[in-house]
Image (cartoon, rainbow, N blue to C red; front, side, top):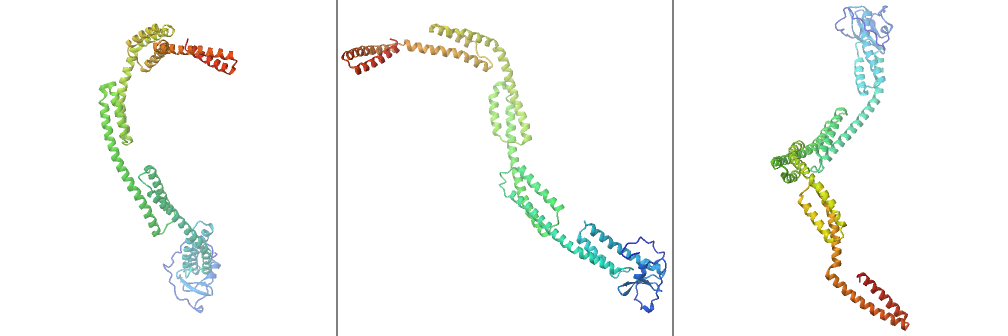
Length: 450
């Protein structure tokens, strides 16, 4: 069995001493050499020996050290007992080396375990190459030292990064608290701050552990920013509740007034429209309250408009014969434009207008307006003809026209004389001026109808 390799578990010794008692090392002359039995391994004989009284010693370098006594067994059993203790330590060392080679474990944790094993292998009550174990452990500790420093540096970098991330969260929370919170959308602000808090908790649970002083300082800043926002939010919603209550009370009264209009039917619609204007000015009462109150308010208005719809349907049914009569009158009124005698045309149109008015109102109003517009076209055409006729037959207009004609005739007679004199005298320039003036006067006279 090798001292550096773990051995298979050995069955317990039938009657081992409860606790081997160490004693002072005997001088070489006092210790009788033990001849290993076939059960003893070469490594046991190399590193351990047993005296006649059952004292077991282990060799460390050139010196022998007593590790205990095994008086009630054979030398092989005594060595085997203490070799097993060595194998236990060797197995731990081997396992630690395997963990270091496989990676994944913390170098600092492995270094601590290596230090504990060095302590355990120093002056251990076992038989084997204890110095070799310590050398392996020292080599392992040396190799872990650099890794431990790297881990410490990485841990410091992670802590610095975590501090920077937490500080950024704090600054963002403080920026939210520094806003003009009277003009913010509270749903959005609450979501932003909630997201920051969730991120803070996630970093606290999954990130590296910060020092107590830095952690408390950052948390105090974050908490204070949240407290400012929460205070403003509570004040906002408290004020909003008051506004909603006032609007809710006002709209409740409007609902009562609207429902009281039901007996008035169509006549209540103007009053309902006034109430609708007041409703729009009453403000918000909260979504649920607004929806419920509006449903009642609208139902009251729907009842009024339903009454008007029924009345309109009845009026339309009653207006059907009137519409047919007005259509017939419009056909008859086409003869107004064909009548050359203006007085007879006016008489015909006047009779049609009287019959038109006697028929009364027509519903729907859109149909009445369309019929009225068609009759108005005929009326305007006749009026235009009458204005032209009046201008022609007006005595004052005729008098002015006759006076103008007389003046033009005199001017024409005079210009004709001037033209004849100029031609006779051979004055071409004067003849041309007289001819032009004469032509202009004759044109004016023609325009007057003379």
